[in-house]
Amino acid sequence: MTIQTVSTQAVSQYSKYNAKVARSRATSEPIWVRWLLTFIVLLFLSIFLIVPLAAVFTEALRKGFDTYITALSDPDALSSIKLTLIAAAIAVPLNLVFGVAAAWAIAKFEFKGKSILITLIDLPFAVSPVIAGLIYVLIFGLQGWVGSSLIDHDVKVIFAIPGIVLATVFVTFPFVARELIPLMQAQGKDEEEAGLVLGASGWQILWRITLPNVKWGLLYGVILTNARAMGEFGAVSVVSGHIRGMTNTMPLHVEILYNEYNYAAAFAVASLLALLALVTLMLKSFVEWQVARNAASNESA
Amino acid sequence: MAKQKNILPGFNLSLGYTLLYLSLIVLIPLSAAFIKTTELSFNEFWTVITAPRVVASYKLTFGASLIGALINAVFGLLTAWVLVRYHFFGKKVIDALVDLPFALPTAVAGIALTAVYASNGWIGSWLEPLGIKVAFTPIGVIVALTFIGLPFVVRTVQPVLQDLEAETEEAAASLGANRWQTFTKIIFPAIWPALLTGFALAFARAIGEYGSVIFIAGNVPFVSEITPLIIITKLEQYEYAQATAVAVVMLVISFLLLFAINGLQWWFNRRASATH
Figure (cartoon, each protein chain N blue to C red):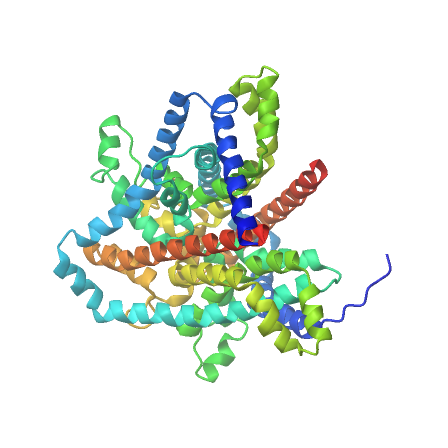
């Protein structure tokens, strides 16, 4: 079996090599066109992506490493980091559980209105972050639907941490569900049914069959959810009230420092978020690589 | 086909939880926006949403979003093409970096773009002698909206380009077509639904964008003030009903766009499965 796998791999590599040669003759562009197009693309991506990303780190370190460290160890900065972590730590698990439940219902069962449900799950992506914040102000704000009764019980949602968490949950709502639904639809339900016939309970099927099958898609969704949760600005800005050291997340803290012309400190906090973005991209590439590798090994098996 | 009985458990629980959570987090709060506007009479509503300053913000928001999405359609297609077809040093890193606008918090993007495109910035100082001002002008809004929409076209076109079979291009070449003819007659017809979807996604995302724009825009009323900022301004003045009226206009447009995009994708999938 080993020999066979190796030989099929060799054949496929050989045909890939052939395809590459064929492409370079009949179905590719002259070399100067290739160079020109590659140059244009690299220039475009530099202007819009690479230069701004580099600017974050140079601006952060412009006044030296000590200023950088001072800016990050400022109590207000630390409390904004803490609040960002809290918001993500609540929003990610909530939307993870929702994503699994929604994907289970949609992928494993047939029911009326399924495509409407899928569209409704996508709704938060279509809503401006500012409006996402606004709708919670309308409900929980002072003049809101339940705002006054909350005041009577001394519960604060808007201009407090619960509002920030709610807004974060809203803007990251679809990510996990969106990754899992197509994945679980493609995998069908044969394995789950086999598990059921062999006597597994529903939860056992979920834990031992379904979740292991979709673990990479799940991780992918969690990575996206987390990145957006930690970086959300517009929605959180509306509900936060910008109380320093109390209701400021990292992006909001960046805004305050920036508007006070404290650029070095603003970019110092921003550089942490940019690092987070880079880690997100690396994890994302790793998951994509794993998925491609699994697909390839499934094909050759 | 006989109806097959589904033996898997958990349907009621999972669907019930999905509907409950969806209602509590999304549907009920969104309906609050529509109910709040009923506090205004139709005339009041109309006056708010057609006030000159608000109309100027629609023009900027939709105009800049359209230009940004068009720039992304052209350069996104080019980027997808180069990433799929050509080989160069560092391609994998560049490919991963395309998703940066998804991963980078919008506020960070906003201050970074402002620093780069301000008149003393790395790129702004080159454009200044040419008489081009980017930061604190509507051009800055276009730059920010191009940035945040950048991955959409690349990521919708890339897989379609990858799946194109070399045989059809070889056939075209053997029948005497040159590369440009092959592109316009063979390749482009295959990828344009994906291109259109990516364009629509980038446009829809740009309309609602706030964080990356407000730093670079300058936010001058009638000139560089986007519609989401109008909503924020009205909120800060405690004009909740007015803020909500403008929000409802944006919501309706966003929903129409979402349905258009879903329709587009449905049609696109049907077309793809019909040709295979």
